[in-house]
Structure formats: structure tokens, C-alpha cells
Image 1 (cartoon, rainbow, N blue to C red):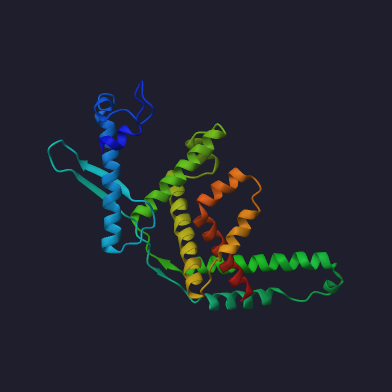
Image 2: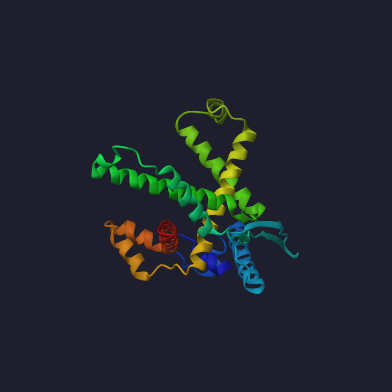
Length: 261
């Protein structure tokens, strides 16, 4: 591990990483070697656990070094949030019920036929959006999912941190923000937890529907999306996260599929 750290170390009189190990050793702090070693230990242990137990993680693991004394065995722990179990409702029935409700609201009104085509198109689009939102809301409501505490804690902390950053940018304290919204800390936490539950339900429900309906994303579709990014630096950055765009395209295709039923 010392050799690995030495290759990343600047030593006066030598190009970066080219100093002999005996010379580099004198400039490298022991803590830096330990940090690199710990990273490797966690990475190797994590990969081995996933491969041995055939686990499917939902998030990066929470790592904790319990004990690390020279000359003794080291002890480390990993908390792994697994992909949650999901029970999908009859989504086609949900759509049929939503469509039936929409038809009840679509009552003919005298003079309606005199409306301009642009108005009719706008109303049609509005009804379609309303119907889709009702379907998605009901889908999230009827889907059951078992989220691990690791996921809940991670998402709660992420939302709380984001809110704290947002309110500070406008010169408010979190207490002032809560007062302005007439909320308590407990009520805010419940709001976040409800949102986390709903968000994950919908995300996993759409993914499950995509699997059931064999909805996939072709490489040409991803290439077409990247082709619309004119800035080369931005495009290269996007291509590093191709999986994010594949997920986004697949989700949109599922929503389009639901809208077409």
C-alpha cells in the first residue's frame, strides 16, 4: 500500500510518483497510508459480500471502522441497503378506473362545440395530464414496499441538508422557516418521510412495470439524447453517467405506455 501512496506523492527533486520508495517513505504520513488501506479493505470486503451473497444494493454502503490497532486484527462493518421487496397493484385496473372517472367529468355542455380548436386541444391536454397524475398517485398509494432503515435515514438526511442549504441562501434560520410554514420539527420530518415513501413506491412501481412489459431503452435512443447536447464538455460529462439517462428514458417510456392504455 505504501507503493500505491508513493505514486500519488510529490517529493521535492522528483517528478510526482517517481521518487524511490525509501525516500518517499520519509515524506508520507502514516495516516495517509492507513486511509488508503482502509479504503481498499472496505472496497474489497464490499465486492466480496455482494458476489458471495448475490446481493443487490440500493445505495452505497455505510462503512464503519470499529477497531484498527497496529499488530492486532482490524474490525470493520458495512451496512448495506438492499433493493426493497415490492408488491405491484393491478395497474391496468387503476387506469381503467381513472378513465371511467374522467368520463363522468367529461359532460357535454351547450356551446362547447363552438370552442376554438386551440382551446379544445388545451383542454384535452389538461385532461390527459390530470388523468395521468391520478393514475400515478393511485399507483403510489396501492403499491406496497419495504424500505430499509438505511435508505430512510439516507434520504431523510439528504432532504434535511438540502432544506438547510436552501433556507440559509435566503437568509433564514431553520426555525424561522418552520414558523413561516407553521410547522414543527416533527411535522417536517413526517412530511419528508411520507415523501420518501411515495417517491420510492412510484420509482420502483414504474421499474417493475417496465420489467413486466419488457420496456427497454435502445443504444440509439441514448445516442439521440446525447446528440442534442451541443456543448462537448457537457456531453462528455453526461456520457459518464449514461445509466442515469437510460433510467430517465425508461421511466418516460413507462409513463408513455401507461398514458396509451
